[in-house]
Structure formats: structure tokens, C-alpha cells
Image (cartoon, rainbow, N blue to C red; front, top):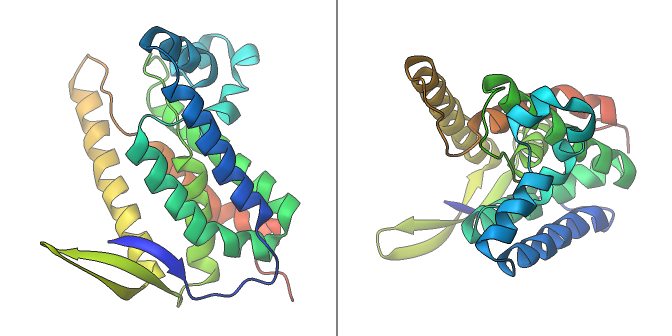
Length: 223
């Protein structure tokens, strides 16, 4: 299933959601223009590398924010931006532009710290908007628990659209990441080598911090 749009109208134009999507796309287009060596250097400068953050906190802390605009491939970018497009506009509408931006960046940074905590000595770059977007999903699920989302559904070769409760889509996201996170944690405990892959703990951390922080940023403010 792939979300298309939700049923909640917005009262303001979500300029920051559009802007965040635009910046992510522009940065990714820059990435694909680089050679392999240049891209590796680009990631070493702007992605979170846990080992570097552990040993050089002061110069490396900025990567907690810059890493949120990097992506590892087209599908990584597209899936993140679709979720931001569908769910971000209503959270921006409820919080207001400035609070929404601070909330988004804070969730992304805290999510990256969650992934760092799991593997402080890892040399594998951690990047992507997934942690920040997970924070947006956390805010959405507590603000619009009864909302439905028009979703693209695939049944073999047959494709259709159906309306699915947002809490189910977000719940699937959380369950998948919890299971995958626990599996990756168990693997790390049983092995002495680094494990790569998706930063599941950043997703989980971002979601939890989104639920915690969203009320503090005016998610339930009166109209």
C-alpha cells in the first residue's frame, strides 16, 4: 500500500512541507551528479557517522541536521517524500510554519541520536529524512487517529485505490520497524562485525519523539 493523500483539509498553505520536499530533491539531484568518490566524500562530510560523532562531537553535531536531507537512492527519496507530502501538511497546519520546522528538525536530530546510541562505534553513514518524517507520523497518529488516507493498493497485477485508516498505515510502519530494529539489535549483540542497512532505530526513535514533542509544539492548540 502506498499513501496518496489524506481527508483532512488544511487552512494554510504548507509552504515548509513543500520547501522541505524541494530541498531534499535538489540535494539528491546533486548527489546523483557526483562520481562515486565524490559521493563518498559528500556523505563523509554531511551524513552522521556514529564513530565520528562519538569522538568529535563539537564539529560533528551539525550532521544531525544535514544528514536529514541526504538519501541513498531514488526509492529512499520517493517513499520519504510521499509520506511527508501526505502527512506533513496537516501537522504544519496545526502547529504553524515555524514550530513545525523546529519540530521536524528536532525529531530528525533525536532520531539520528537514537541510531547513534545503538552503534556508537559504527563507521556506517546514517542519512535520510526518515527519522524526521517518523516524528511527523507520530504527531499525526495522535492528532488524527480516525483519519483515512486514499491509498494505492497492489493486488498482484491489479492496482486500485482504497481508503485506509491512517492509524493502520502508520501502525504497519511502526511494527515493521520495531521488528526489524529488534532483529538488527540481536544480530549486533551476537556478531562482532558491523551491520549495515536501514536505520530502523532512527525510525522508531523519531516516531516516539514525535508523539512526545508534538503537544509541546501546539499540535492540539485551539482553532
